[in-house]
Length: 431
Ligand code: DLL
Image (cartoon, rainbow, N blue to C red; front, side, top):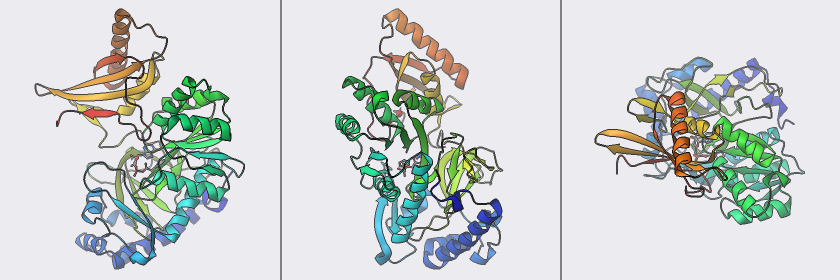
């Protein structure tokens, strides 16, 4: 099903015309209403009238997290505070949070793009939808809540955490769809089994996941465990929250809601715009946001773009699933490695549970990586067998990444479970 066929199946020329009109409007708005944008545009020698084609967007300066921090809390507002009806924050754990503000219109756009997302994953007015991500300043809970109501589903606003209760409600309420982080989805499944409920016996049909990177194997594992279709949902608070792009049942890239968000891929080092298909940093411009529009926001997320019609009939530009952030990447003795690459190897093995952490330490000026992963239930735990398994994992990691980290197979349930975004890397180098 398609929520908004006009936009999701628009012709390329039509869509680009709409994007250009909206781009010119938003650039004009920020230039006249937000001193920080005007100052940065002036420094770059560009005026709103210079934007005559979509390609001209490259003349505009980037906006970074640092710009947002400097503007804390309201410096990037493009409307009077009177028009702001909601404020959220990014999930950053250090320093000042980045603040985002929504007008009534922004909230309507948010519900619209997430309604498209949910309908692409099979949600309807007969669904029972469990919101198992946090409510509050985090954009996950409230974002999905209003969108699911707009679609007409029966919404269960349980929020994240309280795992045994998640399982009970899922069973008793006949939950057919949920939004959850992928790491928490696996933790809930584990708790379910402990409670004597088989995840595949629930009424669940669609599991929407996002807010953190997850490998293709993790995607498959969630589908198999619950006997469902899993859908990737991407977004970030600075832009709107979840809803920037989403998967459909073809599982072939994430459809960008490009009538509202214009995405470029740039070289993370030079900032140069890269051609279609090239992997680089996702840079997003909000085309319709009123409260706090973002011009060329550097997300640090890595992906690539693809045009062309999807098997589902949608014509929107697609982005590859985000499997890493440029600031997630570990550089261990010159080798670049992403936690998701390690995850992919571990989940392909069958002998480990999908619970792992990467520990980075500095030992006499050398960076050392230790991969800690739980042994799967029922796997031989004798010291010999454990050592052999650790060696095997080390060899596979070496083949996949070029690096031979230390591997420690730890007993089940020893790695901290997440109820939201998982903490995959413990970096002790700076401690
Ligand atoms: O995590 C919004 C969200 C909520 C998305 C619920 C999906 C579901 P922030 O807390 O601002 O917003 O974090 C945004 O999380 O820049 C990515 O690095 C990462 N991220 C979000 N979705 C995905 C995804 C929410 N589907 C940051 N795949 C982003 C990989 C994701 N990473």
